[in-house]
Length: 336
View 1 (cartoon, helix red, strand yellow):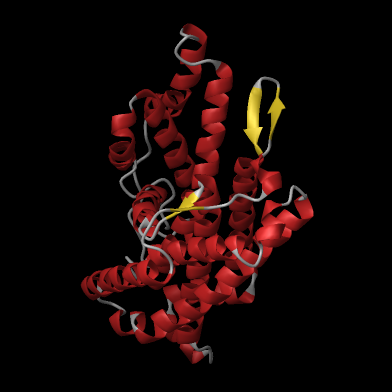
View 2 (cartoon, rainbow, N blue to C red):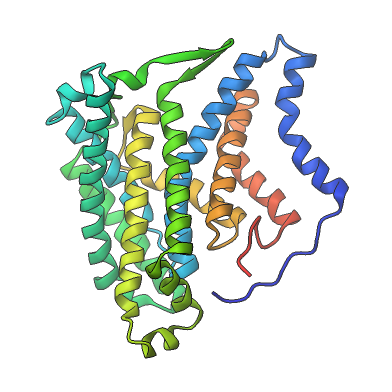
């Protein structure tokens, strides 16, 4: 990984403001409870964390592919959409009885099977895309942008033809539609499931990159590919595997996101790709830890702005990105 210039340390008062600003909505519940009470704030924050964990699944694949392979993949959103549509199709056909059941085991079995099928499809597509298209563009970011944007447009149109051109309702497994209360705060089971999935994959990715032989080869291969080749490792195969892993993570994120939004749409990957790129930029390119923190920040910030000023919700993410980059030009956790 190329060495990046470290940011200058921020003054303590700037750090205090940067942390304190996130507690403004909570402060409002105390001084103006008619505008927002504590249960509303807690539910909104929990929903933002769940949203962030799902954005992380898409963003982390993007940041790994760029940080480890130096590839800008603007077609990354299609894997997200494919995962969502595979889940939608399976839930409405082969697994309908399991999904409509209120039993936890049948519901989790349906989700697990859908994740496996979506992962297998995206592994195959990721391998084909890397070998046939991406491999010819290594070292040329302009080609990568143009080619992957073209691939993304083509695949989205194919999804409209094969899947559906309309927005379709996504069935949430019965047990996960229920909620429980912690005091006066309502917690929806599916939101909690989304958070746990995001945290689970964060731990697995960190373990893979830092504690496995393949992960260490990948990191070393980015730093010094000639050395890895001299040791007899086929770096092309390793990079193909990393690209496929990124595709799988995006597909899983798309499948779970479809339940979070309760619908699927052929353009959903493109919409969420914006969130993912914002996260990658504010996190620090190639940073997995930065991606989970940045994604949760994006999810919470989006929910807060959507509550107070709905018209600014989408554009607020650009504002957040600009503020963070002014304070930390290389992102929250830039790779050294």
